Image (cartoon, rainbow, N blue to C red; front, side):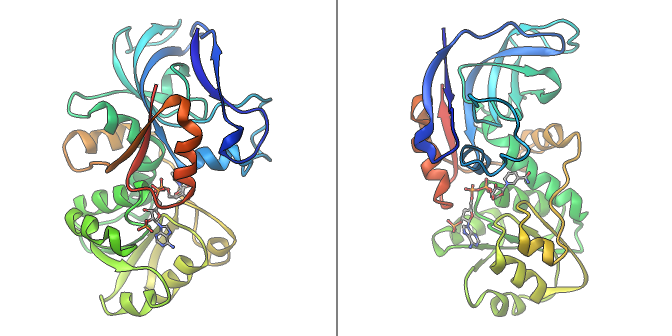
Length: 300
Ligand SMILES: NC(=O)c1ccc[n+]([C@@H]2O[C@H](COP(=O)([O-])OP(=O)(O)OC[C@H]3O[C@@H](n4cnc5c(N)ncnc54)[C@H](OP(=O)(O)O)[C@@H]3O)[C@@H](O)[C@H]2O)c1
């Protein structure tokens, strides 16, 4: 038997239950992983809370989880290029909070030796969103990019990938994260009432990537972006819609490309707290605060 974290009704993280399951054999086009580390993302508590209940029509129980690193232990029919024993990174569409994961082989990429197990589990969902934000904005060395929520997993990946493209990067964060942003090479700015005036003092801003959402960051973007500037958000809501700021689009190769950037050392995720898989509810409570000190992981 093998452990999974499941929920049978929407609610706060305490609806999560650790339970046993008998892992199935991978079907055509699938592989089965022995999971080594699982990444926690805000989408996990949002799914548990029922944010996506209109589109998420699968019957209960549901298993959260969009990110993990593991070893292939079984390969189903009609899978090319993956073998038993391969170390891989999996960008699941839900279902990753378990010891053994059966997954579509197209959602799995090899883990390069230069990418640790912890970094690997931290890349899908959040760092890949950072990659896609930078791609959607077509950032170049002529840009000054504003990143809202620059100290989070999405924001910090956006910062690093944009710096790697040669851009000047300004990032919003609380004061305790300003040294972290400086260490990445970004210019830190405090969010809050004085945000737009602080940004204006830093010169023309040609692009904005929002990894927070909400009225404050949308208003600041509108106030400071140059004429013809580009903006995109990782969390579309009524404020971004009213301002015509599109929700990030995801290129098919976003996981491969993000892993390649990490493997050449241009992207490192700040790792926060690691919880045992059975304590997934505590991990989601911490994610729900909106202020974790780095990527939260679950150790199966
Ligand atoms: N569309 C997609 O593909 C996609 C993928 C992944 C994530 N997302 C979304 O992107 C958002 C961020 O995810 P994440 O993984 O980066 O979360 P995270 O790691 O939990 O980081 C959240 C960050 O937001 C910052 N923050 C909180 N309130 C803020 C404010 N008012 N202004 C500026 N920064 C603020 C926090 O910094 P301080 O502690 O310094 O305040 C924290 O570092 C979530 O809404 C998530 O659902 C979307």
